Amino acid sequence: MILVTGATGLSGSAVIREFARQKAPVRALVRNRAIAQAFATSLTVEVVEGDMLRPETLGAALRDVDRVLMISSASKRMVQTQCTFIDSAREAGVRHIVKFSGKESSIGFNPSHFRSTWEHEHIEDYLEHSGLAWTHLRPSQFMQFYLPPAPTAVNVAKGALLLPMENARLSPVDVEDIAKVAFALLHSEGHESKNYDMTGPEALTMTEVVERIAQAIGKPFRYVNIPLEETRQAWLAAGIPSERIDTISEVLSERSRCVESRVFLDTHKAFGVRPTTFAEFARRNAAVFRGESVPL
Ligand SMILES: NC(=O)c1ccc[n+]([C@@H]2O[C@H](COP(=O)([O-])OP(=O)(O)OC[C@H]3O[C@@H](n4cnc5c(N)ncnc54)[C@H](OP(=O)(O)O)[C@@H]3O)[C@@H](O)[C@H]2O)c1
Image (cartoon, rainbow, N blue to C red; front, side, top):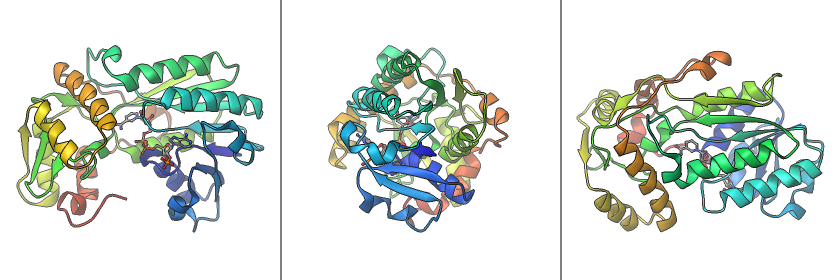
């Protein structure tokens, strides 16, 4: 049995949708069954409740599990959550954990300047020394970061992307591509002790990002470079928790310092997944960028 944690989140739910599309059995760990309704109709998805921070709640989730795709939020408790879970998985007899990690694409990015990056490194190290077989899946920033309202960098009413990024290049990757890679990885052998970095297929400046959004929605869309403090105030006013704002501010500061970004497509190639371009992503989400619908 394969278990996917973080199944109600952005990337976890994309992975579960991929299993459902492929009609492949999977167990989805959720903290609250009520917010996992989207999977209820799939015959191959078994939803199990449990909390990664509370080993006593994980008995049913970990029973007969061979492989886990381990995902949790990039919150201040990520290290504790995932290291506690690794211990529970080992005790329950799990053989292999694929850690959903992260790797910045910005060239010169200093991991010590962004909490999530060094926390992922710490957890990777903990997993490597756990005695379990391990694989690290390391996507760069998600294309979904640009979708409104998360975390409102895109202002649909103003027809603008507002970020304190100058005109730095980033190589965002589509979460749907990561989900396809994760599915293929979990269904094939020979990935133990390997790192799979992933970026999207292009290193795009902010101007190039908005050009693609404008083309997809058929009307003008601008990039406005605004001071970081102004961005923080806008997010606070939008009700985004200050912990999340701090995390995003750290990464934006570091990304705007490193203006070039690498493109790395070996993982897409290794698993036969065609890299989605930002133009395709923008067309798929045109209604969201026009403010006519919300992201999945
Ligand atoms: N955003 C990016 O651009 C980016 C890029 C590369 C890597 N990453 C990494 O990708 C990972 C996933 O990100 P995401 O945006 O998909 O996360 P997300 O949407 O915040 O989802 C996190 C999931 O983890 C679950 N979770 C958190 N604590 C848990 C616990 N104690 N027990 C059980 N489940 C728990 C949440 O469940 P609830 O629904 O119950 O809260 C939710 O389903 C993060 O580690 C992040 O650092 C992000």
